Length: 277
Image (cartoon, rainbow, N blue to C red; front, top):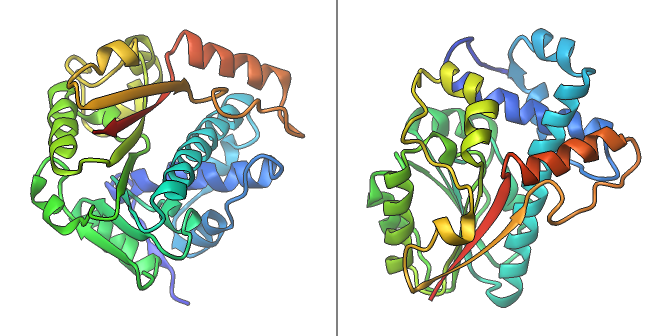
């Protein structure tokens, strides 16, 4: 099978780091997290992984991979809980990249929708085949016309993993309020950082994307209070490193768990669930 070339210093390259992190975490901590899809996808890419390979045995890079894996596990937990009550719902991946969470949570009845910029969707469609109940939408999330293609009549759960950090705070609020009005009984799950976390953890990533000023970008220091945007939205929030799982799996060092506690408490790493009445 022909490999898909990913050039350096392109938007497509930003898809590689989280994908490789999931592959690495699956290899190092299989009792906690498995993602055969990530390995398969990395094997299909024509990309120089040598720099990432050099880092993969470092303690902090391991923790970064764990961080990404925990976020995916937490979001998957919320999706599966929602599907128990709404088995034919739509699972909508906002800023999907090369993530395959929809298929991972597929119960055989739900619909799967993946949304991202046109150039990202173009790469995705080269690499990932769609199933019968799945569709891709090429769109900027801030252009709400994509919502016309999302059917929430049987329920809908939207999720955004590592996406809203790059949005202006007012854009996230506007998007959330629009979703709450269009999709009663729907749900949105997303991760967030506090202000300190945004500055410390996102500095390099934001700079690489050409963003040089974090002022105005979205963060949450106290999600239950900061997300009080509407009486029609019920907010629940948990720490995303230890809020769902204890991370006491083989191979995970106690220092990983120590950093996880710091991440949840000081950096304010959270998974937020918004239910729309």
